[in-house]
Amino acid sequence: MSPDRAVLNRALQRGEQEGGSVEFKERLTENLHLSEGRLESLAAQLRHRVLSGDGEATYVVGVTDDGGIAGISPAAFSESMDVLSLLADEAGAHIEDVQTWGVDGVADAADGEDDPKGIVGVATITEGSVLTDDDHIVVGTAGHVDHGKSTLVGSLVTGEADDGQGDTRSFLDVQPHEVERGLSADLSYGVYGFDADGPVRMDNPHRKTDRARVVEESDRLVSFVDTVGHEPWLRTTIRGLVGQKLDYGLLTVAVDDGVTATTREHLGILLATDLPTIVALTKVDLVSEDRVEAVEREVESALREVGKTPLRVERHGVETAIEEISETVVPVLKTSAVTQEGFRDLDAMFESLPKTAGEDGEFRMYVDRTYNVQGVGAVASGTIKSGEVEAGDELLLGPMQDGAFRPVEVRSIEMHYHRVDEARAGRIVGIALKGVREADIERGMALLPRDADPVPVREFEAEVMVLNHPTRIGEGYEPVVHLETVSEAAVFSPDDGQLLPGDAGRTRVRFKFRSYLVEAGQKFVFREGRSKGVGTVTDVSPAE
Image (cartoon, rainbow, N blue to C red; front, side):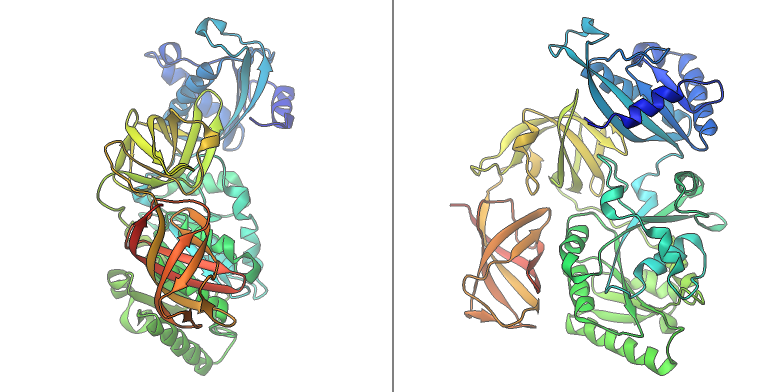
C-alpha cells in the first residue's frame, strides 16, 4: 500500500471532466464490463482519456461517480485491475503504475471478505502497447566513470550529437532505483527502437509520452540497463549484470584514458556471466589515430588474457560481427558521440542482434524481489531461468532457513502489470504464490516444479579468477558471493593455500549463514572491499 495520499488527493481534486484525463470507477467486473458491446465502449472511453492527457490517463478505482471514497474488497480490486488491463490493451495502451490505499468500509461486503477494510487505488494508463520479449533486447552498459557510457547511450536513443561536454548524458539522468516499479519488467534507463524505415528515436527522453511513442511505433525495441562506473558502487553494477536477464553487454573504453582497473573488472564480470558483449571505444575525436590504435590493441590484449577473441568491426564488417558475437567473440568498434562515428554500425547491430534464448529444461526461477499485494498475497518476482510456468502450477519454493523446500501454488502471473496465463524462459515476471507468506520469501530462493528433488547446498568447489586484490587470498577469506540472485557472505579455502591477483585456481566456498540451490556450471562474482573476482561452480556438496 502507498502511505502518501498526495497522488490520490490530486486525482480527486481534478475530478472527472468532459475533456479531462481522469476517470472514476467504483469497480470493474468481467461479467458486466467485458460483455459484448460494453468492452468497445469502455475502451473508446479509455482511449479518449489517454489522448486528453497527452498520452497518460488516471483511473481512480474504489470511488463513486462523484469522487466519494467507497473502498472495495481486495478481490474486487484485483478483478478491476484485470479488467482495466484488458481495456487498456484494447485501446492500445497499458497500465504503467498502480498505487493503493486502505480505507474503512467495503462497498461490496457481499463478496464475503473477512477484512472490514477496503481498497481505493490509482492506476496510471500510458499510451502504447507493451512489446513481446521476442521483439525486445535488453543491453547492460558498463565502463569506468567518465568513459562516455551515458553520453553514448544518450546519443543513440535521441540521434543527437553531443556538444563535447556530455550534453546528451543529461537525457539519462534517471537513476536505476527510480525506474524499477513494482512488477514492471521495464528496467531500462534509455530506450529506442526500429521500424521498417530504420531507427525510431526519442525527441525528449524526459517526456513519458515520447517513450510511449517509441514503444508504440517500433517493431523492435532496445533497452539499456544502467550500471554504475564509480568504484564505491560496484555492488550495484554486479547486481545489475548478474541478477537481471540481459541479452548483451556494452562496455565503453575512453581512448583518452585507456583500459583501467575498473574496465578490467567490468569486463571480467560481463564475460564471466557468458554475456555476449560489444566493446565501444569512445571519444575517438579527442585523440590521434595512433592513440586510438594503441588503446584498441590494449583492449584486444585484455580480451585475450581472459580467453576471448576480439573482432574489429572496422576490419571485418557489421554483418560478420552480428554473426560471430558470442560468449567467446567480442566485437570492438570506434565511436564518437560528437562526430557520430560508429553510430550507424551500432544501429545496424542492435537492429539485427537476436534475442538470446532462455535455457531448456524444467521450470526454474530465482527470486529477485518480493511483494505483498493486497488482494493477491505474496508475490515473488524474477527472471525465468528455464522452462515455462502456468497459472495453477504446483511448485516448490526454497530452500527456507531450515533447508527445506515448501510446496506452493501459482495463483497468477503478471508481466508489465498485465496478467498472463503462462510465461517462459527469459521473461521477467511477478508470480503470486498461494501457500506462503511474503515474509517467508527471500531473495536468492528458487521456484521449481513440485516433482523436482532439489538438494540445498552449503558448500561448493569452484574455479575462480582473482581480478583485483591488494595482497593475497588465503584460507578464511570472506567475500560476498553473487550467484544468480543470491548475495551472501562466504568463506574461501583455496586448494593451494592462496590466490594472488591475476591468479586462476580452485577453491572451496562455504556460505556463512545458510544453504541455497547451487549447481555445477553456474557463474558467480565475488567481492570484498576493493577485491573482486569471478568463478564457476565445479562441484557441489549437500547442506549439512
